Length: 248
Image: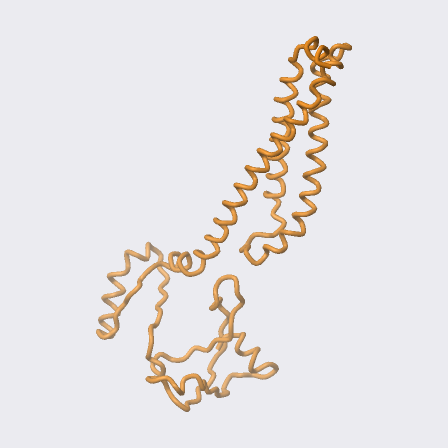
């Protein structure tokens, strides 16, 4: 039996030498009925319910006693395991011609099909929507900052008419834009610290507070804000001051 089964049913005592009966065998054909099995050893737990679940209590029954159903043979090789399939089939047939080897594959492909497929699909779907949302956010930040600068055209025209240098006006607008962006990023980071904990169940070997994500997104948004503010400000500083004053 595995360690989980020993802890669950034999807590505080030595299970070696004791006997167990599996009542679930009784209604099944080709299984031993009303039979007790002696416990001869304890093995370490393996993930028998998937990679993200803890090990369940498990017992190993001799193949000679329970021969119904399919069995798995795990072979460790020093070369490509696919090259050894003909040899394995030949050796198995030599031992027992009535045994057929089916569904031969590598452990990596088995894990990819049974354990990785669903989490990867969930991550891909979530990542796709996250990327779309990020692009919308970047576009929104760009548009808002450009619109905000355009509202200050008359103010900028007056400043430049009174002697303000274009570089000073440009720096003033960029500084204001970065200030608003920094405030928004700080609010978003605080909210993200709470919401990422809700996604803990979907993460495998990735911490909710992933440093790369919490650095890359603010940098991307800051770059979009800086680019939008700079381009809009650069255009505004090239306006005709006289035309702005006449419109005022």
